[in-house]
Length: 113
Length: 115
Image (cartoon, rainbow over all chains, first blue to last red; front, side):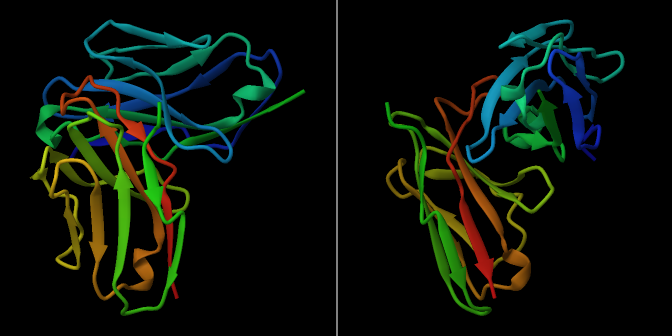
């Protein structure tokens, strides 16, 4: 069935380190792909999205490229900050699911000074 | 402007009781979604409304769960005969329209604890 697999955390990095959080999906049709972020004590918010193959979503220094051939949408950032500490969720939606989001389990990131 | 709001923020109830969880979406958003998030997991889809009607309720776990949106704005998730396994954070999200590339805006959630 449809699902999202993302790397397990927690991930601990020093400030200014390079970040990669892997995400792969199994979905029918042509899904749209998303990364959502949940900062401590706050609600889920959209970080970036890509709606078709080879699109790159970007926001706040984070990037992810829609790779249809590998069904992946890995999140990257070149230099993380302490303020990036949060839980990151990979997700997809398509018409088969009524456009509801299908989430991965989340990856907790802790950035230390 | 105001975001998605949910009430109550916390609800503690006893096994077997009935609970109602409320969601106020962003004004003008026609699509509304309910999700459930258990500890250490991502949110799981429950039900999707487009306007007043439930367009997809395939995520509701059983017939103890029911949701309404009578006027196409506020929605209420109703859980009958609560069980300890229902304990989770219940999230509501709204979007301008029910299209897959429309951003869903999430509320802060209601934490339900069934004793």
